[in-house]
Length: 249
Image (tube, rainbow, N blue to C red):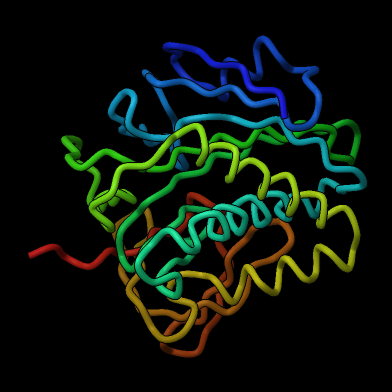
């Protein structure tokens, strides 16, 4: 693990892509202050300087075809669940909200942005941008459901130690997806760890249409298939369907 520490940067993913595109596997860019952190759907990521983990890690898994590249995302998300296991009050309440946010019950504790680079039909590098709420206890943005480790436990955590804990687990699990058997095992565990994996829940389309559905499957491409309450199934890409969150009273 090679760690590059920056006092301040717009985005660790952008820095990695622009300055370290040829970095070796396990290279980490971490900052105390990320000015323009990005998440899925182009959302910004709120992180109080010096209190959370905001970093990117270069991953170079071997033998990942473009059609199965979502395995990298699954492995990274599961690795963070593993790293938080034993730190949160109840690890059974940790889950992965598709595609790869980490939730504790109905609150978001971690966001992930994976950027894959392809060489022909093979993944030649993946930048995993990760933001984990650790010691921040007050969130000022309009994010609907932020949560931090400190809010859950009342404790303060050493960010350096946690960074190494998370990155080591990420590197371990990404290695597993280099084989077909490993990808299948990761995919099975990913499905079992999904938020709202059982039962009917509300969803919304970008045009505002609302419906109830259950999760049917997640394809190797990352596409989500839902079974609507009328029995009809439909498949969605990342920006084509939105989970309706519980209303906060």
